[in-house]
Image (cartoon, rainbow, N blue to C red; front, side, top):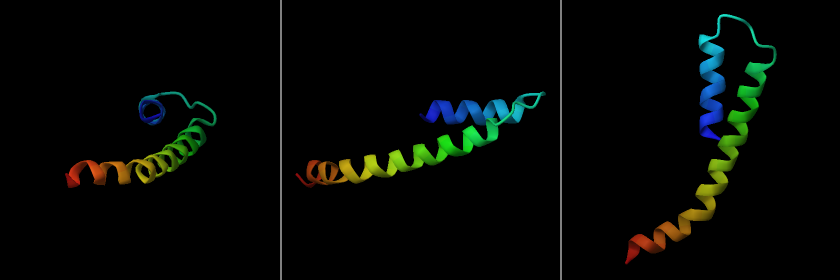
Length: 54
């Protein structure tokens, strides 16, 4: 997911031609990636805390 968001941003910045709706795709993929990262952190944080308390 990170690679896709990175590539859409890079193409948007470096492309000499306008690609319709690429900015919108980049925006929504970034939001989806952010939500997925928060969910992943929420699920894995208890396991991480147990692992390092030992």
